[in-house]
Length: 422
Image (tube, rainbow, N blue to C red; front, side, top):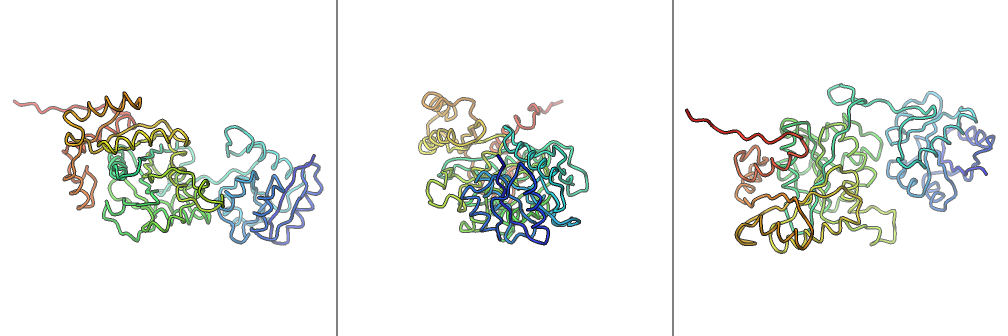
């Protein structure tokens, strides 16, 4: 039985590709779509298994390709012979299979067979197999080839509602990791991004919104990402969040995932400041393909290699922390590392670390907790100066506690230095 193919091709080679598919025994054209909305409607109706698109198809972007894949289609690109610009655009949009209109029938069938086989494989790898054209190797902003380097580690910083200090922990954790290796800090909070304000950056900086727009259009590469994420300190780049909460629609799921993937190639560590809400917006909307406000956080949690969950060290904050960790069980994410922030004796009594550890261990089964002391004066001073704790108060107790958080990630044992007196 032949597999159904839907096409949305432009140019003179469209009829040639359709004739080539008709000559094969494995594939048959189910519908020839005139534009992208027609193609999306055919995909939603389940008319095909494979979609063929042209680089100059109107409104074709990464989000549209992601929508096609949500309907179970695998997508391949088709270009005219010699159209290197079109082929490059399709590859930048994430397509690993790009054929030319003059391709032979048996070659086209083999390429589509390999594409379907990879889509059905458990790992869903996107590598080049079976004669597929491999994507061009990327270069880092300094001109060094990064095709053979290992990708960076993604650390997502998340926590419940109530202002437990997610952004403060994310910012200072990134600053301490930057001491050891290049680090990128991404602000993906769609409810109240604050990294730009904490570092004294311009509120109108493009940041994540511009990066996601470029990713949607297939023009985001390492050079563009490096331009959008300036260095605020040695080896620390920052991609600021949306300046206003009503601009959350600019952060689409597929684009955010592509930004995180590129950031892995730009730095050794990628720290993502996430929003508090992890509800699936599809349950709150009849339109399951509409933009989702919580998608950046959900994508970051799914892409993360490490997860840091931040809770406040007071009775209300601890209760929210317990429920938040329970809610994480329903979301694809790594094993959480719990950090209790703003720990103080005035909120829970004497020996607050011991009391909190006993309560969370007894009632929530949490162990191996990390604690950050409450030092509002130092945090306020760093915020006023637009600096991290390492720059503003390097000898403070809070900064030393943040340094201890980085030890499992940098694999460097703590060094205790003592002054010797003659």
